[in-house]
Length: 52
Length: 290
Image (cartoon, rainbow over all chains, first blue to last red; front, side, top):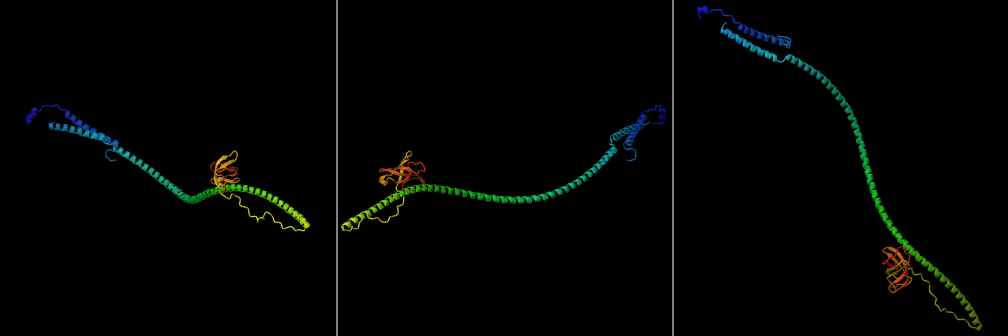
């Protein structure tokens, strides 16, 4: 792929937020999981990191 | 954005969702170990309390057991002493029982001997009564004979007295006649010859013959007339029976009566019943001597 071709073929492509949304979804899932685990640890054992 | 990046984003997202799902599922389903620990701790505390209470109860029970053992030991000791006393009493009672049994046996033997003695005495008494009965019969017969002998003796005495009076009278007549004869002969100068009695003098009197028939005659009663007290015997003058004879009637060893013969035929004789002890029957023995 030559720069000329690139230049020639470069045309404005609208940014797709699909993968951003997917990443955000993955982040949200991980975050929700971390919150859920923290919630369970705190309310079951009374602490997050110390072994009771 | 390259395709690789996109692919990595998608894979990262998928793996994140998958792993987060696994973690959430695990955490959601995980056991609450703290709660389990608390429960176990509570259970342990409860068990410790139960253990303490049970230990106390055990100690109390042990104490009660010791008390009961002491009381039972005392009871056993008292019961052993009572058992010893009862054993002594039992031995005494058994000894008394043996003595009583010996006394019972001795009394039984004495009673048995007494019964045997009583039976022998009863037999002896019966024999004596039988002898007395026979002796009474003999006594009656002898008294009857004595009465007859006495009557005969009185009669003979009267005869002797009569004869003596006659003899005296004859002697007086003889003396008178001799005196008159002497006077007549002296007047004529003659002497009377010595007189000689026509009847020779008898010798010294002999003892009387024993009472009873000199001969022994035996016969049977052939007829009985109880209404007139008469009986017929099976022997007569051909056998030597004479009037006035007395036959004694017996049946076995029993005396029945006497028969005084009043009429004699050749083959039979009739007599009057005397001293009747029992009813006379045909076939009874009649004999002059018992």
